[in-house]
Image 1 (cartoon, rainbow, N blue to C red):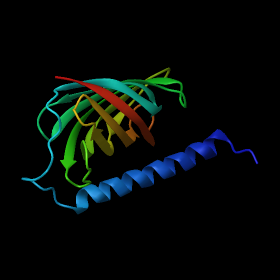
Image 2: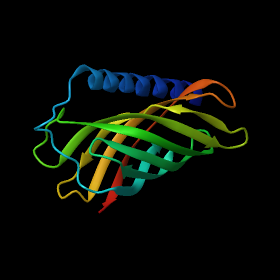
Image 3: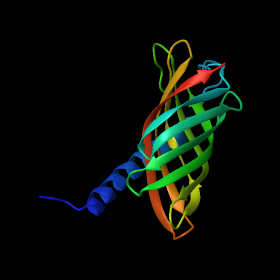
Image 4: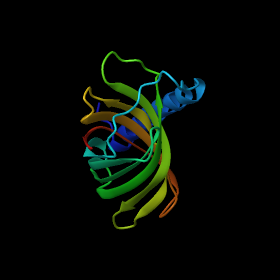
Length: 169
């Protein structure tokens, strides 16, 4: 049975929205540890790629031990448009102990602009996981980001993907 792309898009959005809700619930449900939590590598800049919806370049600038500015420029194959975003991220360490490297929950708020015929603009709420490989030169991440588009029309959109960044010291 063939399904329309609209049905597949709706199912994908429901799945991603459910995953985002579960991650937000996890982030809010447990207090962060202070003294024994692992620290992220001391690398103020990262640059890499994100593969998903949309797919493109991803960057990060650390502004403290638990915060960063995330930014991206990517192409949406679903809507045939360029996406530009920037987010203020917070990292929560120690929730998921790993034997090597560092794993953190990240969540934040930012904005997205869609560049195409009609344009689009709205707030973005990313939630995901970031893993810093041992040695601290590379980070891997996955995230979902509900977006409430307010300009050209009002609707809920969901972005998400997996990515990797090389970290510059």
